[in-house]
Length: 87
Image (tube, rainbow, N blue to C red):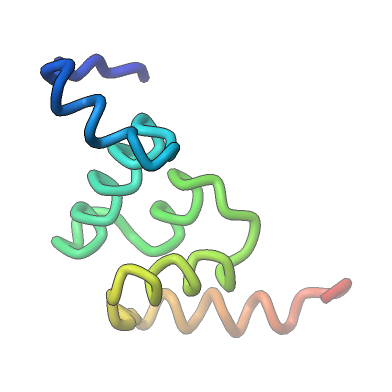
């Protein structure tokens, strides 16, 4: 789904002045807030942000000072991942 957000030009210029991708920043901000509010899972967050591994996601969460929000389901998936051949 594509979503359009209207941002005043002056603000958009300031927000993208550092050379960062404004669309990506908006996606990261919204997805991170949904994760912190426990409306999406860690796996959903990883997929939404396009990270290949949970380690990449862990680095992202650490960089944004978000502590672990580990559920039983997360632990079950981790165990399943470790038991999968080819790792």
